[in-house]
Length: 126
Figure: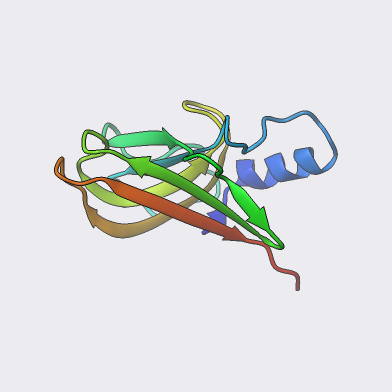
């Protein structure tokens, strides 16, 4: 999962204590959409025009250990019933900063299903 330019800049600002909005349980969201538009670091939102939804974190998420942050949201039967072709991590229910975005086909969710989505961000050193 690649960082967006805005996500990278947000992490820099957080690192220097610039008072940016944290990706905490109160603020973090996983968004899904049906667009298969290729990733661009310049993107600031999901690329789907209408079929996109952000869901708040499940209790105790995000969680972190060593170099990994895990984000998890549950999409209930009435949520995001379309092909999931993109997903992203945000720090607001609308607008805010999109930390990262991934384009991949995850299948088509229907109204008879509840999907739990977990995304992990792993930080490595060179």
